[in-house]
Length: 319
Image 1 (cartoon, rainbow, N blue to C red):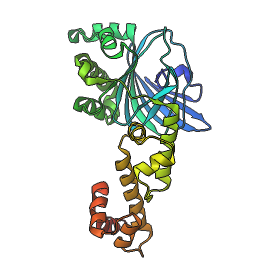
Image 2 (image 1 turned 135 degrees about the vertical axis):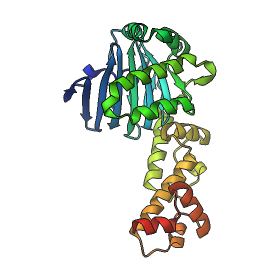
Image 3 (image 1 turned 60 degrees about the vertical axis):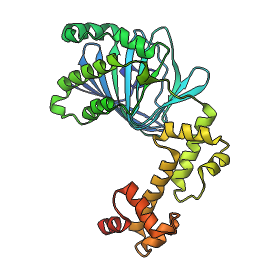
């Protein structure tokens, strides 16, 4: 993320300091965001990011070397790379970046869906290593080795299906504020130990797309949001927006965190759920027909697979 979340001096708006927590507010014409940063130990920070804006990127020059670990809980983040291509950090993804004073890896960034929630763990390489050596020397954690294994060729993306990653970060999102800081220290050690054990099979390079493919795919995303009952197939959408079907499928999943087929079904059922409540005069069969199902039983099965209950139960609960 090229320091987008991590460096408080690039945020010149309202700052509220509460002991070791700093709340950073960012706003521009595209929206607003909040970052809650905690000083865990010398050289180690954790930041909770909640951004509802198109972008908050500001180019900066690093005076030291950093290891930055980003986990995306919700939404996605788009990074512009050298050469004009882009890549995404999507829901459930973990990436490790080496931010060097000698190299600018990212040229810009955006939040395509105007929604990003996640956690950043930032380690200033020299100071954080001294902290780890003094405070947890028995772990033998080497930030330099982690950097060489995961970031030797720039940014590396850790496969999101790893159970260990979900376990580590799910607890970070729900930790009791009374024990936050000591708990952060424990979780940072757990995370670094996990990263220390990774080999090449657990790391994959992020998929890259042209800026044009990214833009057109985001237009498809918005079209589905605005037309949840569309009868257009994936092939139709690809043709409509001037994309190869394979490019649309790959880029859409990077942006939305789900396949385009799953996303269409989810948005269709969510819209059907709204009709069940707002249009009580319509029968369930009629709403199923609007959603593209001539057979009510098939509509009910599809609805339950997304919403967790049958249309009848949903209507009964909310009407």
